[in-house]
Length: 158
View (cartoon, rainbow, N blue to C red):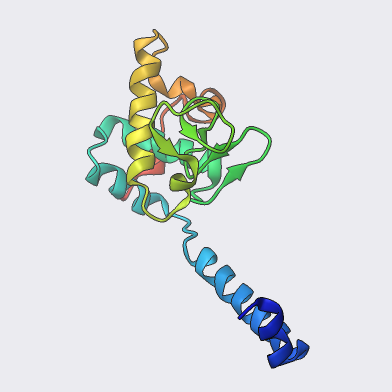
């Protein structure tokens, strides 16, 4: 049946109710994917994914400065994505963006599972250092002003 026939069979009020329910269900599934990490939770996740211990505190600081630990953060001015605000200009693919250095979709950086995010930031870090920018954290503009010093406080007690 066509949509018109279904809507005329159900009546306009019932059809509208069904559409509203479907829209709300779709929104609830999207919202359930949002995750805001705690400091220690992020530190332990980074460790479990093989991030060197001497980098963990700085990554936690950068995630706080970039996204306030929100996995669904998107900066609509710079088109940076996820908890580490990875740039679509260079590192992930989003629509018309030319970047895809990490070989991933920018949307894949917006879920609860940050495995790809961590792999990508480690790659960005290594590439940045290979171009002589040491430490590789310099790829993040928030590093110099927020995270260039002692970051051990971000993970104390973790």
